[in-house]
Image (cartoon, rainbow, N blue to C red; front, side):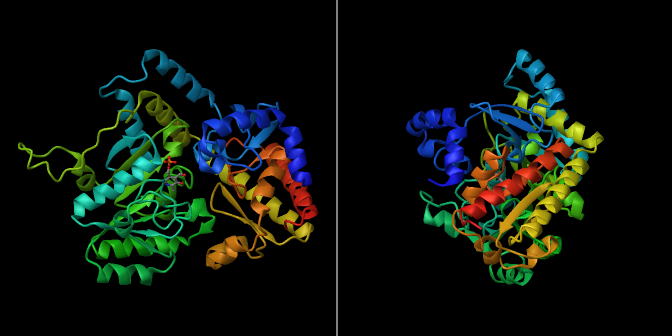
Length: 443
Ligand SMILES: Cc1ncc(COP(=O)(O)O)c(C=O)c1O
């Protein structure tokens, strides 16, 4: 057994025991694909601020950050207080609430492109709704998405993804046009030839939270070309929303999308999502006619937990804090320190690798040497393909052994509550992890 694995097993005996049982309850023993770790996943019990603790009593600096939802860290006191108060007042009131209006207004304040909104329970629902709205509004069927851009796990979003398309009807996949990103001529060529395209959807950071980064000029080109061909431009801000700036990627780069999809930060760490955008598209949901025929073309939108009061109060509280504090700036600064620190370690240890990423999203590519600001210009197979097999999993476990949890083994999602000490502990852990990986010939 490798040194990394044997340390992992000895530090996590309680997780190992629980994993035997979870393997019988859940496929792969986990409830989300990316939580899978071989030989077994870890079980966590508690999170506070930038830290979390597992069932063996180990403490971690946490950069999974609730899959990107916890820009305020774990259990921010204002969110705990707001949710606790609301639990006692009702978790589902089956009617409008003032809370959902407060939530919607907090979004509109930060994202000027959002005129009207509907809430959902996840980002997957949000992108599904955005695509349907675009189809209903334009009367067209097809959607352009980009290879590897992740928009959740519904049937349409799964086209052009490396995560498996089992069980999806081929006709559904055929309604999706998957293009490589970064080349506006490809997009324009497609729009000029195919008159049945309703929308273009993009992950504004580039695929997988910016692990395959995108130059912002491409976003501006997309906006221009979608306008030229009367196609709905959807910015999927599930990750970038309220992170790349208070108003997301669109405010950071000065863009005006037709529709925006949101989740994660928008719900303050509780389950929630939203679609917002121009009123004429959003109002495809509104009842219009006096006869059922008038409503044939409307987009229906039920959903038991839409704008659930707990998510509403957590989301509104979170966005109000972001609006008045410098949380985004602090998160970006901590991420910059991490990237610089990691790149210094790569240099000092003479290991090929680069830490890069936009805003508070830190990515690591093993085997690649380049200017961190220019990863967007490197062919994608070189960004992801140069790492030795097993490097990512090995890194995830070596970092856990050293007291740091990373997202998927190559990403760190930074909150506004990661301290300088967290950053320096993480850089120390990074160096320890690289020593362990080198010993096992994984670099
Ligand atoms: C850009 C993007 N869109 C959509 C989703 C789906 O969101 P959810 O996991 O809430 O369904 C994700 C999830 O990570 C995402 O990263």
